[in-house]
Length: 66
Image 1 (spheres, rainbow, N blue to C red):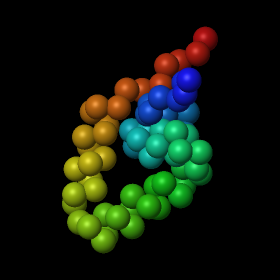
Image 2 (spheres, helix red, strand yellow; image 1 turned 180 degrees about the vertical axis):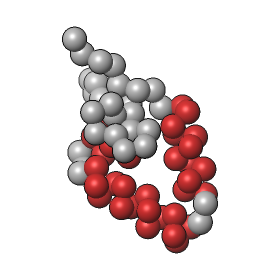
Image 3 (cartoon, helix red, strand yellow; image 1 turned 120 degrees about the vertical axis):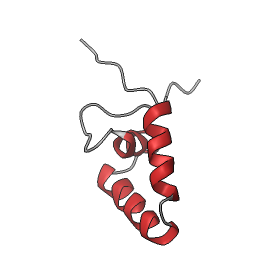
Image 4 (cartoon, rainbow, N blue to C red; image 1 turned 90 degrees about the horizontal axis):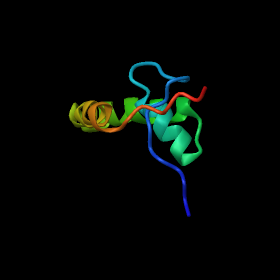
């Protein structure tokens, strides 16, 4: 069973941790995912910004491990 969950990162966040969470989920470098978001913003317009804001509200933060 796959135990991977999409969560917002607490340790590698710049804004809300969405890009770092996506990167961790997909096994990529967070900088690459951030660059993709920026490029998509310039290509597709503010739609990607709306998607980021929605993900910021819907995707939960990762749990803190004590």
